[in-house]
Image (cartoon, rainbow, N blue to C red; front, side):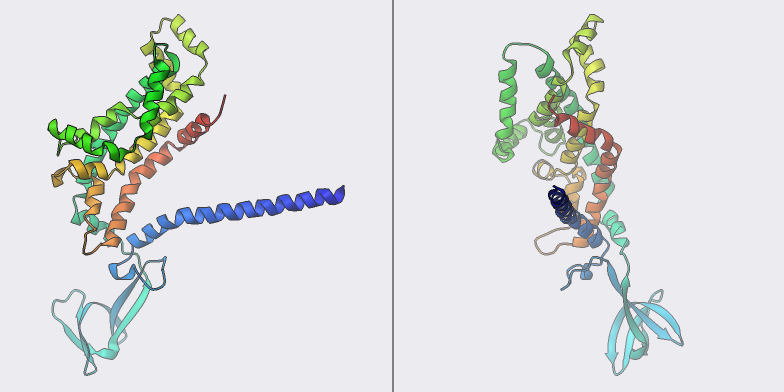
Length: 334
């Protein structure tokens, strides 16, 4: 009996070790791309693709050491010509002739923070942030409003064809977005909405099938007695939705808000199709300008991507408590 207990205890301990190792390996795989993006955003263009991958950003600096004084060199004009070199010392316009032995190159860990400044100087970064926020927030607020109203109707109100209509809406989730892309473009073109924000905002105002489904499932877990009590107190359905359902649906609203904000913030295809004027470009379109057929400024692209992550991370950590609670509640069968 004791031997069986010890064997089971060893098996449990071994299984826990294996589980933790698998989780640790999965965590490393998930975090590695983000770490690479952060590391690349701090590298110079010539130090990104090396034979052996380097995670720490390094730079090679050139100095001139004369009489024990080390002075940084901007560029080496002529190197090792007859034992001498011509270098351009920082702060001087003219090249200086020095012994080749005085030129020293030093490689050390040095983040290239100027990449972030170059991104802001190269593209109208803050204009892109403003356009993206405008499109995302208007669509998100309107979408949450209509989604919650629709979910309340499907969860609590009774009307003919309610379930059939709900399942028809769910069926739209099975239609790939690429199938409706061309008809939608033709429709918006005939409406004269091309090169405006309206094709990106108006469809988002009507929410989505996934959001309606998620919120309806949460509302169905709210006891009907609470709704009956609110009606006895004199609330009509709209007041019941606003004063009772909305406060109880904060976790789900936070979950949908985070996913909706991420979807709108990271949308690339929609602005690419409908926007032509560079002054209306979103942040994702501006970041794409660092990539072309001939070359890609990977370090600037990664620096811009890191800056574009800041609003999403701030929103996630601000609503993390509600986000986790919303995921937990919608996954529990009551």
